[in-house]
Length: 154
Image 1 (cartoon, rainbow, N blue to C red):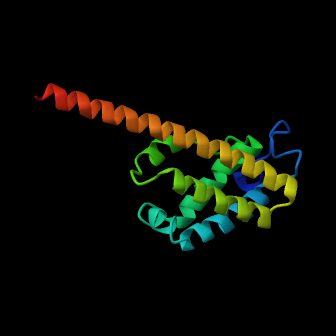
Image 2: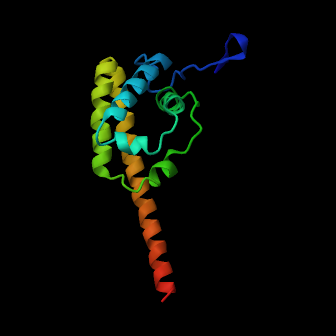
Image 3: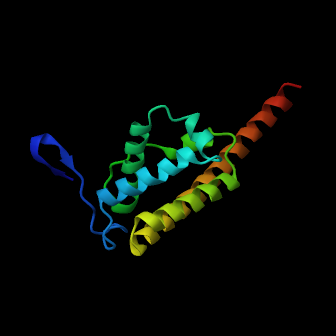
C-alpha cells in the first residue's frame, strides 16, 4: 500500500500474489465484480437471495472488490468475515453454489483474459468449497445443539 496524493490510499498488488503474474489489477477486479453482480441481480435463482439481504449495492460492490483484491492481489483490503454471513442464509445449498460458480465462470471468461480468468475461477471454486464445508459444519453444530436442548427438556 502506498499513499497517493491528497492522503488517499493507493492499493498495490503483492508480487507474490496469484494475480500479479497474470496482470490482474484493481481495474480488472472492478470490471469483473460489477459485471458479475449485475448479472446476479438479474438472475432468477440468485437475485432474490441477494435482494433480501443487500440494501446498499454500491457498498456491497465495494466490499466485493476489496474481497477479490485481497484474494488475488493479496492487498489486505478486505476485513470482513464471509463465513458467518453465508451460514445465516438458511436456504443456501449446493445447487446455489454451483449456479453461482457457473455464472461467475462465464462472467470471468467474458471480462478477463484467459490467464486472469483462470486465476479468478480457481479461487472462486476454492472459496465456494470452503464456504459449503463451513456451512455444513455450522448446520451440523446447530442441529446437535437443538438435539441436546430437546433431549434436555424432556
